[in-house]
Amino acid sequence: MNKYPIGLTAALLVGIGAGIFISRYQSQMPWTETGLGDVVVAAKEEGKEPLFWRNPMYPAITSPVFTKDEMGMDYLPVYADEPKTEKKKPEVLFWRNPMNPAITSPVFTQDEMGMDYLPVYADEGGGGDEPAGTVKIDPVTVQNIGVRTVKAKRQAFSRSVQALGRVIADETRITRLHPKTEGWIEKLFINSTGEPVRKDDILFSIYSPKLVTSQHEYLLAQRNLKALGESEYPDIREGARQMAEISRERLQLMDVPEHQIRELEKSGKTFKALHVHSPFNGIVMKLSVSEGEYVTPKSELYQLADLSKIWVQVDVYEYELPWVRIGDVAQITLKSIPGRTFEGTVAYIYPYAEAKTRTIKVRLELDNPDLVLKPDMFADVTLNTGLQKEAVVLPDAAIVRSGEREQVFVVREPGKFEPREVTLGQSSEGWVQVIDGVKAGEEVVSSALFLIDSESKLREATAKMLEAAKEAPSTDGSEGMDMQDMSMDAGGMSMDEMRLDSGDSDTLDMDGLTLGGGSKP
Image 1: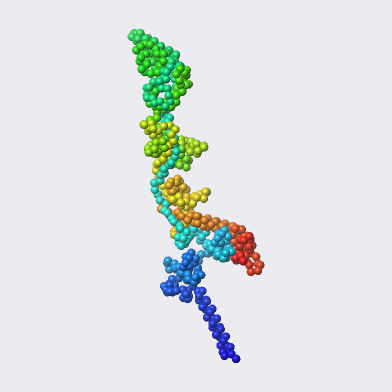
Image 2: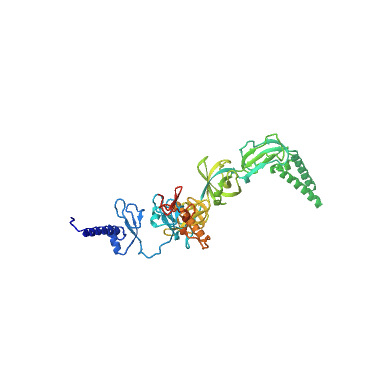
């Protein structure tokens, strides 16, 4: 016989079950005081409401409702900085695989590892007045991925060009001596290469029948001038004078030195061999004659060079040529002359490039009074290029180079980064000149560019697909296509075409790729 009536027992069981149900329901509600602590209660009294809940040990792990971690620690509430206002919930266009952004779904689902697909909202596709590819990142993520920014600034822009040079003789100070008439070399007064000479030093003496004949003609003209110079007829006097002048000028044009002409006039006797003198101070660079040799006007006897001024020929690469200007100052050092620096100026830029080295020759001019710089020496040259201009510059690390274009990410507002194509100029010491695309004072991203650029390209592609979907004609005659009926995965097929109605599975597995609203079992 039962001690308690059956009805009372049933009532107790119903009461206990209701209590358990209510306690579990309350434990799942975000605003129940059970287990939430005094902080939430105080915030609730002040009218605050948490945006989401964050793991106390791993801030990157969040939850939309209150929960606990594996160790039983309460998730911490995260509040908005400003009082919550009513905002229109953004429209979810589709959901994207967190590990493979190319795989998308029109409805919320999970991948094979149980990770939630991420929502893609309508305002993330570059809508409104925002350029396609604009990236929005919350401040926590910006800090976690290490985004740094820098402002474009206007400053003087110059560069030092390092190059290799070769010392050569000044071509305007090189003389190649040829005889003015044929004859024989009687004697060489300067008979070795490299020997220094001074202006008017005798180089050699030459015997030439033509020179002997010209001397006789001059002597006859002088005697004729003495005989007819006092004639009462002006024409005769003038003719005798002109004949004497012409004969003397012929000797001068044949390089007969002035002192020998004066001796010829005094002595009245011709010389067998006449001297040829050096035209300036210099060095014998080449000697091509010997005593007794028969020479003609085609024969090069001496090559003389004045090395008091010297040239340095520098090879500059094509990409550095825009920096070089005529008049730039250069410092020159040589390993053969340690501890000494020479200074020259850019005098000429050659108008052609070397086919094999792809370099352009630049000529420097400098003084060489002590003749320590010798032709064919190699030199290290530093070209201090002149100021380009007041240019807008950015760090080289802020430029994203894709091969086809260069772009930067401009900070439009905190957490919003706009991709912008730029036209670049020259670069120097980690800075690059921006000709067009960015103004001085604009803030651009200088780190974590790979992550932002990847996200920007995905959003730009999304915007293009949305635009194409709106403009594409529909088979039923409507204006466009509904993104909710379209799967934006790698295959490009609609979910209705690929869904199978077999058993409890509403997905189709194609070589490990899960499509549809469920995860692979």
